[in-house]
Length: 436
Image (cartoon, rainbow, N blue to C red):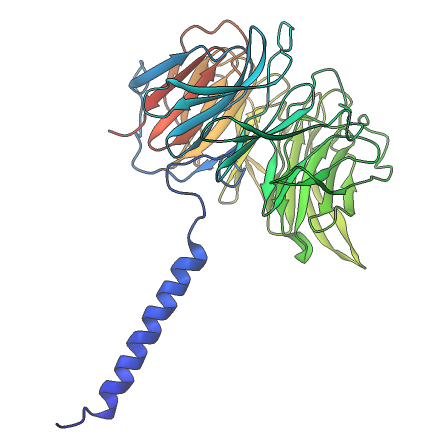
């Protein structure tokens, strides 16, 4: 048999190498979260960005079609997490505060598990959202009860108390509101105690791995935990956890909980709420109560990290009371104003307001925001839900509707997953179709 020419062998090698490179690239860029899942607070990356596509580009006056609604969830302001065939949330029922699991197809209750006592207050009820990690989920009640449950059954694996075990405290009266973070083998939460501002636990057993003691950060704000949830950053070449506390922003090293940096100027003395945004070596945060917003650059400094202020925006320019912010490209979109949700677009790198800040629509109070498929969904305190094109060119409203039966502040963050929009409204969860 005649041997093939050398150039054929060379082309074969090139082809095999290209295949190997493509496979490697696919492995390195593949998301660890299955499409259509929303396993924790603000989505897979805790940034309020959904990867859904092919969604409605406009809404008529009745909004997207309602697929189903589920009642019996109790009171509270928790959002939802979604994994495989289940939806998870929290609610105050008659005899206590519970984690609830619903069937994703129709919203029927599958199980419930008690976390702790209910919060009997006009605006009480749980604020945190369960975090799902494989076969387990984690939830934090308003009294600081931290539980690990089996996602399939609700059976309790372990529990800790942020108050009793770590001397936890809140900066003000609205109790614990955090959504726990899972990072590898660790579960990280924020007791807010003097010697345990953040703690890392073994996610399988609840055993303590480390705790963070903080130095004095400054005079602004109050000691204790805020109402934010931790995000992960790789800034300055160090994997770290960034959190907004009662005294402001902090970064702690993921490996051992060592304090790396703090920033006090963003703190107010009532409630620091919205989760920070992280990108590369930068951290952006905003608080209400006439405080403002800031962009920080994190850079190495000896064996630690220095947080350098890039810019600070005063409260007249941008303050996000609660409802959160999203970063799309180089643009931040949020509701601006204390107890207001005036839509605004700010350039991330410069802090320049591109549009908004004084735009009025029929929404009242703060607005919770999520991004999906080139659009923003603003959910206002009075129950108005508005579709807005995510463009720095200008404010472009694409439709709106009102959630039925709003009697309390309509605060839970919207979720877009699997081509659907999920809106928790106290005792009821609404599921809307977003794809034709």
